[in-house]
Length: 436
Image (tube, rainbow, N blue to C red):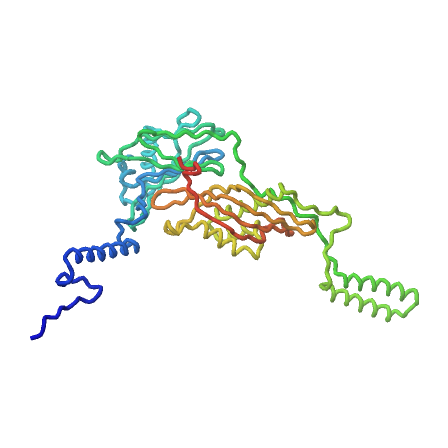
């Protein structure tokens, strides 16, 4: 028999029985494979327990306040078990409220808010008017359905409020289930703020701004004085007709010749009315002037504001109708798609953000040298603040943009005719002081 031959394991395979591989080396190689496998699983998102993104847990209760002209509106969203325990009410069907059950629920809500007053306006405790009670299931980020009650309340305002205090004193859902905190959105004019309350700080006080902002409503200057369209060839034919008629009388031409010539020139004038047409300003009207830089900035601000306000409408046709007041027809489809896409939050399940304010941070206007060229350009930097409701509560979202715009004057007024987005990015509401 020949000498004993050693057999090596194939490359890449850990063989613990390999006489040429020490147990230490085998352990090291095995751990390398384990660590590499874990890393790949984590990178592919299969290890949900080590996900980089924190789970988005819906809160048990959420409030949404808005100061309007004659009332303070409030939307209260609360999980059904909590709602039923606090209000001490029952229903035949857990998620349906019949007409016969509605009065008892409304009275229970009134009694509860009388016992736990939440809103004080200018030093006076105000009781709410219950507008609507709806029960609906809401799905969280894991696809689990949670039953919520949505209550819409109104607080009457006799005058413009100077100070509104919110206070919450119910910090126990059940004896063994404390409410650790309460989130709310508080909005006024075109501003909003996210408020967090807890047992240590159970109050938030809103003070009316010294100079309330007025809602922008398209303060666009009227179009330039109308221009008349002059078909030069047709005018020449009509001038020739007059001259021929005068000449036929002067030379005493026959009636047939006169009418044949007049008819021929008239038909020719009609046939050529679409040729060599020139647009000119009537001589009795003053020359048109381009807007000043300040006026151009106001025109742009109004038109851009309306491109976002159009999406306050739920009907697509209504959105297009409002957009058409600010955007050229050829640009409608593109602007609709770009603005809508900017409002859709892909990382939040496709929820659509509701715009609360559009704030222009900077706008630089470039006017043409020729005033007859009825257009101007704007490079703008602006910030859009909105809110998105999902998983039983709402969040504030802020995006910032830089873009080049071209505005042209049409018969109906000024319109956005071109836009080129140069930069856009998500901003942190806390860094901007929007979330307290």
